[in-house]
Amino acid sequence: EIEKLIPTLEDASVLLNVLPTYATGQRLCSYVSIITGPSRTADIELTTVLGVHGPNELHVVLMDNGRSAMRDDPDFREALYCIRCGSCLNTCPVYQILDGDYGHVYLGGIGAVWTYFTRGKEDAAGAAWACTDCRRCTVECPLEIDVPKMVEELRARLVESGLQPNSVRAMTENIKNAGSPYPTGLGTSEM
Image (cartoon, rainbow, N blue to C red; front, side):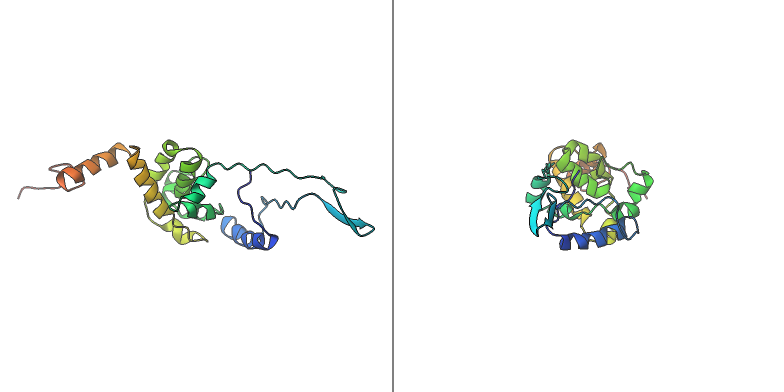
């Protein structure tokens, strides 16, 4: 699966320096592929010839998988900057408590956002409501992606679609009806 396309090797070198440092603590990642096109050689009378030592053509099939919709949505565009280093997951208390069972293919709060675009709002709902909004992910992210802000917007969209947990629905009704998140009579005492 292709996760990112980088236009130049110079741009890629920046990513290649940041990613392993935050992902594995190593100097180089082993899961990076560099594709530059059909092979070229100037060995034959200093004339550039294509395909002598490899393919004449290169075909790359790219799957959008919700990325265009994310790019076009100003509330979620920032999620495309994620380099999948995992720094947010290493510091996330929910991820630690759930022992990694926090999301689908994409994990954590950022995973809730990605899941919303790649699999739909129903699949994103569980992870979106699990986030505690502690902001540790943003502090640890090498790109300072504001994941809690996106999760908050995602929750608002889930509420509009009726996809909030019953506890949140009940709390919202209590606030509307009684001006308090607590059920009537709870938290009051007779003196």
